[in-house]
Image (cartoon, rainbow, N blue to C red):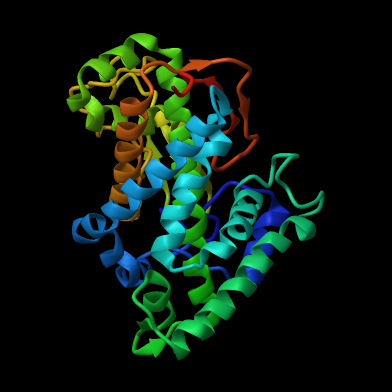
Amino acid sequence: FTNSPRPVLTTREGDEQQAALGTRTLIHADDPLHRDLRAIGANWFRPKAMRALKDRADELAERFVDKMAAEGPECDFVQQVAVNYPLYMIMTLLGVPESDFAFMLRLTQELFGSDDDEFKRGATVEEQGMALLEMFQYFTELTASRRANPTDDLASTISNATLDGEPLSDIDTVSYYTIVAAAGHDTSSAAISGGMLALLENPDQLARLQNDMSLLPLAVEEMVRWTTPVKEFMRTAQQDYEIRGVRIAAGESVLLSYVSGNRDEEMIERADDFIIDRARPRQHLSFGFGIHRCVGNRLAEMQLKILWEEILARFPTIEIVGPVKRVFSNFVHGIEEVPVVIPRRH
């Protein structure tokens, strides 16, 4: 099974548009190209790099929880915290100036929320594709800047990388930026907002966590399993195959439903329950599996852990005070609004 030629479920027009653009991100590529592309940015997501980013994560968590408190006692947790905290983290890693963060937020939401009436750019495939083209234009300019004046950030690493001894092509360079910027933001935002909702809808689990913060690393894994930010990917069979009596012919596409996998009772006991101290907390598919396992999984886990340390230390009580609004999306799904009430500042 291969990622190409259609790594995600979309319309025929969407497939044709992707093919015309020539996009080659980590989710489009198969080995050996995937291995070589992944190696370019891998060091920026290893444990050593996470230790270097921890101070920034601590600073941002405090900043956005401060804003949450200042907005309170009632605020929208998604817009105050869940959207911005991971955006600032991934853009810091890339080296994008803070003045451009809002612009990048809009583009990533339009890319991953193209099925949602609030986020999508327009009604046609061409109109919706403008968000991708604008992102390409932005990162093309950033590439030129980093090649002329390299700095200590992931953008410089990507801009000056080589493949088979040659500089990355323009499309490969911009594709790399795009997947890091978009996947590094929307997925973490979905896990943060979904984690808040899960805890508030399961007050017994929230109370257990508040009483024993040593459970936080396990709770983070359960939040990621429970929310399953990436709903699906696609694979294409390169040879005839049979699984559980179902025959798949060479050339046919199959859907990898991570939502279904993360509720699989054969693999996960009480899969439909939110339990913060599972015996095997990492037995979920939210980060993928095998060679395509999410390269940024450590960053996502670190962000959630640090943010929840800050939230639970500051607010002894949190309650939902209004309806939750979800993003309508076929690929990365999340939550647009979680109105909560927190203790008033004294």
